[in-house]
Length: 328
Image 1: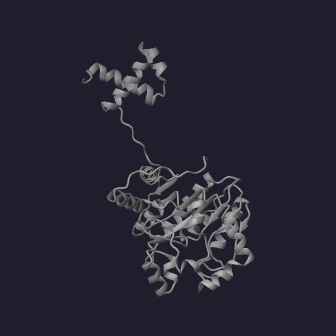
Image 2: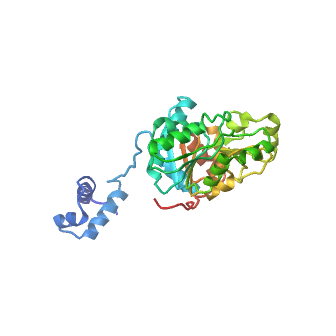
Image 3: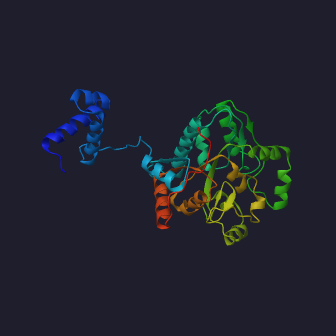
């Protein structure tokens, strides 16, 4: 039944006392001379009749609604969606890197081993100087531009220095000229040591690229024949060098044997894998990575988040169970 005017006033009084004045149900019941259970029923009625409406606001710079929807749809342990204007990829990468640093600050403990793979968006982590709990910081991939390691090595060292942890780096390219060269590089003591530590990593941060021009640093740096052959074998994207198909399954390709870095099987064994991705055109590759269970965390922006949810809905995907990870 529709409440009478007097009842509406009572609903408003109870709601104001409870929600705005922060009074307990027991105190309200005592003042009004009614039971605490009736107070609870009145509060339920106030919401049902629209006397009380609840709005969950996102803090400035974040879209919490999209973040929650991503968690529920893909079973993610961690999801953060930033609201970003179209200021260009460099600005977006810096923003995502800063947010990644903030996530790690709240996630990493002294008992962790942090693994960092190559991703252009992660430069902002080091630039921000976000200090995390001191722990070993391990390089998971070779360098992008060559054996000088001007990118990923600097990232690992900067994060370790900010936290007081120990950096574990090696000098090797991300992609070797051929499989034989890659095998030789993997035998080097520093590379072998990093590979052994990769199996002890508890938290990893990776990037996701689509297997298309300008959407993957690896795609752009290999020769056309390798690009085409990898495409023919079903590649849709790569997770910091681990090549995947449309189902998120790691692919064993001739190019894979040339890549110096973490493998899909290693990613699957890591407790928490935070992926950083941007660009709406990468949606199919990011969707594959999420569906394949190789990552259980995503830091992204509103445009890509909406594209992922739209694509998943069109494909008839339902909410996934949360991938297990340690309680923190």
